[in-house]
Length: 120
Image (cartoon, rainbow, N blue to C red; front, top):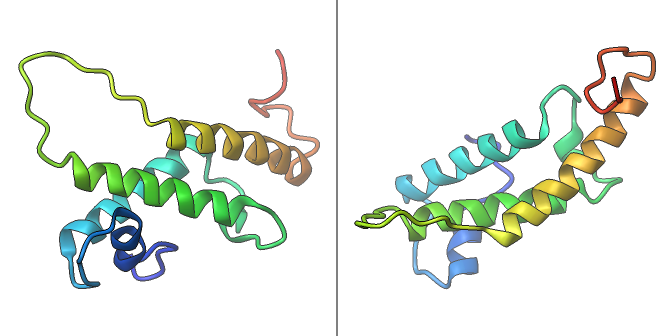
């Protein structure tokens, strides 16, 4: 993605790696991480992830960096036992983003009777 909120050098600096912006593998991981976070939180609200009047852009950037770094670090995961990885940083931030998204959704669509955040 050309308009990614995270650059290859951002993730490289976070992980203390010597990589440049031409690293296509890291670019792919960044794109996948952005889509993962957006799919986990929601995509119906225009400009939700870029609204600088909220904490969302900063949280979104850290979540993408964390997940892209995880994808890069564990790109070849082979094991003869089943493991259950827990990315506490990512899970914590996605939880916060979901709460902010639910609040923004209710503000954007106050009369929406199909709002998933309302009890049935």
